Image (cartoon, rainbow, N blue to C red; front, side, top):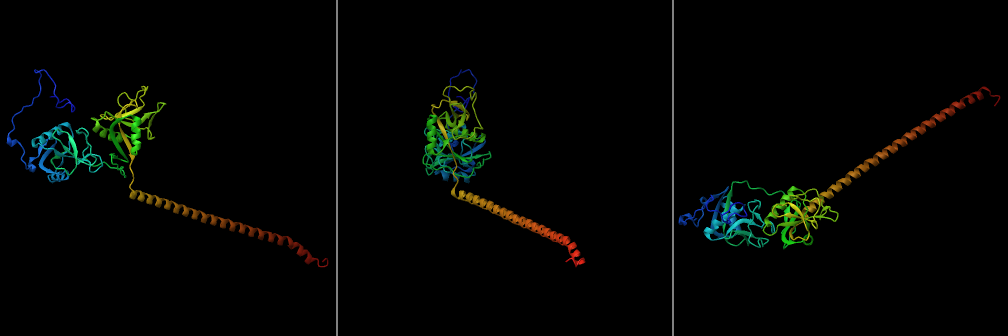
Amino acid sequence: MTIRSVNEAGKWENADCRHSKSYICQMDSKPELFHSTIAPDSDFFRYGNSSYLIIPSKMSWEEARKACREKSSELASISDYYSNIFLLLQAAQYGKPLWIGLNSNMGYGYYRWSDKRKIDFSNWHYGEPKEKIACVFLELSGEWKTAPCNEKHFSACKKSEDILPSDPPQDIGRCPQSGHIAWIPFRSYCYYFNANEMSWVQSVTQCIQSGGMLTSVEDLAESNFLAEHADLYTSKTSGFWIGLYRNINGQLLWQDSSALDFVNWGEAEPLEEQRENEYCVQLSASSGSWNSIPCSSRKGFICKTPKTIPEAVANVKGGQKDNNQSTVWILLILVLVILVGMGIMVYFFFKMKIQNEADQAAGQHSMLLEYSSAPARENNENNPASS
């Protein structure tokens, strides 16, 4: 039985009997090894860095979550193949499926662990998740299935020593609500992952019909977000179309006209000389890296659309904008009044100055006339006979 990788773990292969290997023993189970039908707190059993408890009582998903929280734990999240097998073995002891902490109650079609952990591993049954609003249970096959959250199942609780992550900050706005599309929020945008394979042109059409466009990628954070979610679909498709393509001149462009200022090319990409017909770009579902392939290839696709701002927030922002505009107009009017006042003052100042200068000139002129007429009067007074 191999343990080389997660994909091959548990599979069998032939080997020389003389080779040295680890081994597994088996014996008949003793009744006292089974868990009792009542599960006290002391029945938590440890695996890895976590402790688990099976509650062998049928209840709804919310009831199961409440029961786990009453025991200072949370409905179990599953981070890898081995944890999944471990819980499967616990379920097999009771012969019943187990509620786990995965659900889409908080986001339409967006499945999240109730303990806020990232989905780094998935083991969906074929065709799942098929419900947009549902809770998830671990089947006795080890696969995950969706079901109405009011269904009754046993449950698996988990305590972990790891620090629970907090929700990443999201920009204001909400994603479109659609009966068949599960938009996932990230920062200012919403994303839709569709694993149904089709050509690049067909995926462009599908995105436009859904109200978005094939996704562009702005930075490493957005690239990591896309890679994280694309990895959940590796069993359904090897890659997803993104909005990057080459035009007839060989230039790389985003379908939504975004600036191309970030790339995440795979090894040996992009080629200096483009191979024939390789004008469209896919994102690898397993690695998140990009590579060019023919546009006629059949892949899944990722759509992107801006969040819509709620009307109340828009009104507040609009009111702020109106207030800002009113403030600007008031300032402009005040400046205008001050300028007009200064203009009037300058006008009167110059008018008074000109008037004073005119008065002074007139006074000087009259004095000059007086001075020039004084000798003539003196001559007339000294020679009365001549007059």
